[in-house]
Amino acid sequence: MAAGEASGQSAPYPTTAERTSPREIVVTRTFNAPLRLVYEAWTKPELMMRWWAPKSIGIYFVSCEMEVRTGGSYKFVFGHPDFEEPMAFFGRYIEVVPYTRLVWTNEEGGEAGAVTTVTFEARGDETLVVMHDLYPSAEALDEALATGSAGEYTESFAQLDELLAATDAPQA
Image (cartoon, rainbow, N blue to C red; front, side, top):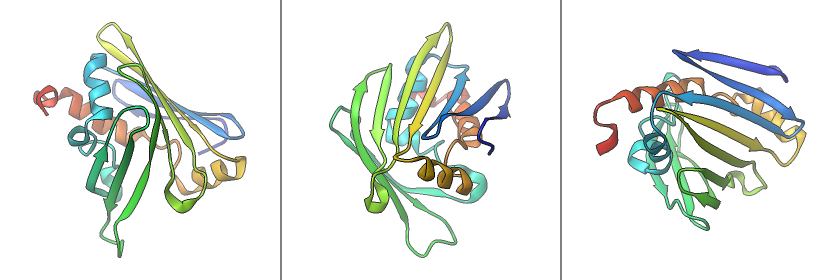
């Protein structure tokens, strides 16, 4: 992805990603679902497991632990047919304002990672989600962009669209 803006189409709403500073990328997406459902998809493990990992690259959840509260923690363990061992991503929630804002650390790798801030805004029957990933250095963001691990949420957000449209989403 270029240092400027990139977008992917997920009908009917685009996902946009923009590098807003040397250390930050901002991903924006509107979902055709009420705020409550969108927020719950980000905060309930049984829902997160259904959309977060992009299916096209073969990654799947082995486990998903989320204690969504200020000071709580999360741990996502992923598998892939080419992995010898599952890969864990983990961190802690440094701010949780229900139905408004989530802020978490990304602590895998034993070094300072990005801090992710996600905001949720109701817009009628739709929900605007804005995700900021702030990296510890410009080099760390450059590396994440080069490997495709930053700003590439088009497929995951399309999967979230499918989940939100499913009739069983509120009961999950």
